[in-house]
Length: 444
Image (cartoon, rainbow, N blue to C red; front, side, top):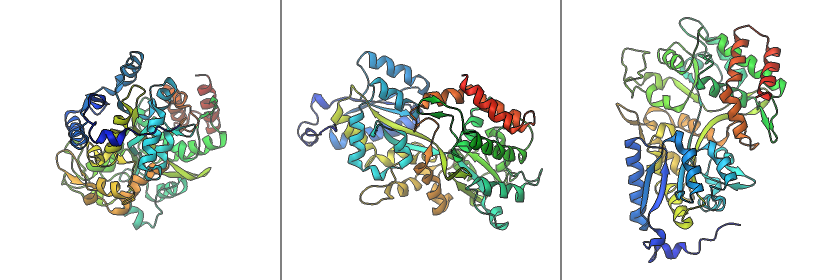
């Protein structure tokens, strides 16, 4: 049953500053000094508008689960927690999250204003158990200028990517791709999950670890081998893929959106080297972006997404907590996104007044480290829309099935990475790789 906020109107008025609404506590994993300062500024805006004081409490992300469990046991949870996707289901099951409060916040703001993928990841048994705040999707970064010169279709499918590999791979001056092959790097795990999701391949079902559909897995592995065959030799991970793309020696890579400001020459520690000017925006102007792509067994495709949430806790002062989250996702949303715009896509694209209000605001927020510029100055409107649209189809293994923890165990074991490397190195056949992956993940 939805909460009825009968006290809120009165609270906003005469009673808002009473002890019942004082000292709302907010845990955040964005603990870097500049990011904390922006969150504190937002909290002060909220207090100025409502009279509710917010204590912004930094928590190291690796300690968040342990601290939340201890606080729950002591009946001392904060009112609101900014947290990662991995805690959505476990905290709902444990009773740490107030599901009714989160569901009502989304209803009040308008469920249709949120990216469906981000909302779906936090929906359990029809209820939204935590409120999506921001997210990012892994991107296929490609040389749009070369694609246009060769008359190639955008890399939004296995088939289009393989056609581009055939046309553009010309080592050592140009590699078609830089596929991660370093088994012990999480980067390889993320890219492989994206490739497999694109073809509808998942290792879990509602009962736990089921193993992959053999045909989908085989198609995905053969595709990944084509990427690896068009890459340099060696143990490759994010470092080489960025360096080669920045040097103009790679036609396509898969990367996080944190590459967007670097592409435009705004970060001295990672400059483009395509020309002699490390501050040049030339490479950004020649770059296209795809946030999702499709395999032959999944024509709708998928994006690999990482989403963060506001969890309203079971110990919260519910009305005050709901009001804070709603403010953070409306009047305070610009401040929320400005913490790190290149990695905080707006999961709420707009509101009743303008369905693209927050996307427009986000595109004007400055990004960069050593130099600053808004993304809208660096990339055209079509690219900006593509960057954020992936959140509509964002997926992760185990989310829809309620088996995120089982899927995480498979990923963390690096079994898939290891067997894929054996296959692309020619040590085993694709059919042997399919069998070995399914047998090993079921034995975990």
